[in-house]
Length: 189
Image (cartoon, rainbow, N blue to C red; front, top):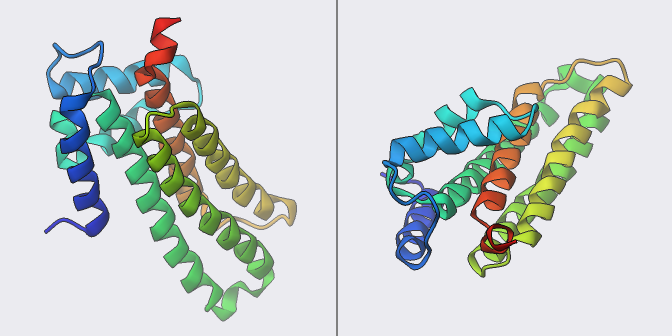
């Protein structure tokens, strides 16, 4: 059974897919995922092709999505990462063995809580046809992941959230790249 966010995403993609056209309509869906991930990795030295090409296909509708659908999938995956990370931070805050990093964890909790709302609002803006706002907002979530990670380094502590921060940074970067690729205004200029 699909989780509620995945069901929501499925309905959005089914609704939006016939309404939008994209320049890569003749490719098979697997090729679209692969070529999109490759293009994003080629455009940025910081984006991971392996993470992109293994993350997007996890959502079953990615196999029939266009670029706009892939952008929604990347944002949905980022939101799932944030939700899972908040649960991890909650558990860590209850652990007495992490008292030396409690302030960092609280900072990360605030950053991740804000990131959840930012991603939800980015999805709404994207669905309304506004591509610039989600690009800016998803970029700010990337900064939140970096800020969380750097907070631990300032105290000389290892971060228990390194994987979560890396994945969030990557998923948001992938979403930004795909939104830019699917932006009809950018294509026209």
